[in-house]
Figure 1 (cartoon, one colour):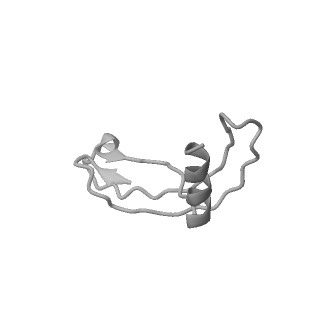
Figure 2 (cartoon, rainbow, N blue to C red):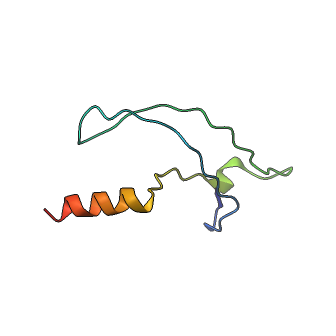
Length: 69
């Protein structure tokens, strides 16, 4: 989560499992609980929430070897 100037306020790692149906896309749903530090008068659009995938070294190496073929 970042503030409006994209300064990182918090970063959390979550673990999830997803079944791959095809090699081109994946779709899954998970539930996360986030606490947003609001103070009186602060607008909720003052925050940006980014979601991404974090690969292990082995997963990254595997993906990179596939793209060079």
